Length: 448
Image: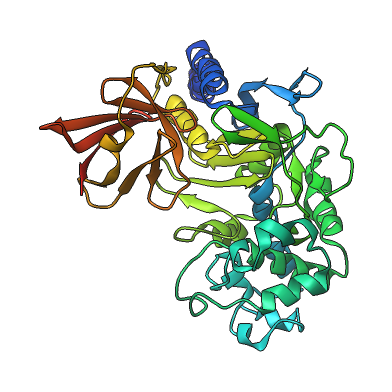
């Protein structure tokens, strides 16, 4: 009887090990390595990727340069600005403040920030957390990107700018992503704790979790081991990242971190290290956006956030059922890191071994005007615009930024910045439709 029980326990242990290390097999690691090389060569990716199941790192590799001026290569576990991933920390801090009895999420924000205009009197902290306040994003501030993003720093001036904004909708009636709401949440935290946001973050999260490579960045401070940031102006041209004052990014996008620290952060949710299961339900049991996290329901259930600021692109996701974390940090803006993270998930969960093929541009002449127009997907849900400027072709999906596409053959084009191919269909020498292929998926569009 005793031997049978021992044998059963050994079998259970073997099965557990097989499940736990299923993603660490060499083929998966090799595919991820090949994919990272393709990203670097084709999309200009420069940064670090980490994939882990529980605490076990399946894949970790850095590629590119931390200083293009000095030709210094990136090293593992360096620091990057993580932009809007900061919101995941602010959301947790609000829940911790509620636990401590310092606030309630249904409280009105004006209760904690009296200087706010009375037109915002119906906005609650929960509205701000879930982006349902109606506040605009930075574009709502007049001349923000051209001027004020460089000098707007004093809290009184920032609140004054917010007070001039007009709500897009009645609070709680819709959703629109806005970082200004998270700035207000950071100010609320400072008011109830009587401390700076950076201190609250350090005391409540970073110290308890021993996240020694993370912190809050100011615009001019020197942070040891923080990689330089660059901006991809075009597919083939990279410049130094423009200056941006970080004061208005407080609680919304002013943190720096490393891939290993972000692994600790995602693991803290899987292990209930910081927040209880009940508190995590508050954060994640939402429709599209929880308290600082997007709710992903395609593929497996997962929680994620991306980030982008001058010089840096970031993505963090974890899959609770698989206990898998995917972290992508880059020192180039603006790279499609969310799509990179989702393709990594396909490699892991769908056992993809075929990575995007490096496309080659052909030099044959073509008439750009032949391909321009508006195209509608067969489902009717997606609009694709093909435009031309200076004899070059550009593609734009919905309201997303456009990108240049390059010829790869007769009526065949591809994107460098976005890994997608276009095959145009013609009748009587006129384009009638096109087919796109991206991340293993095929979509057909008809010309309108």
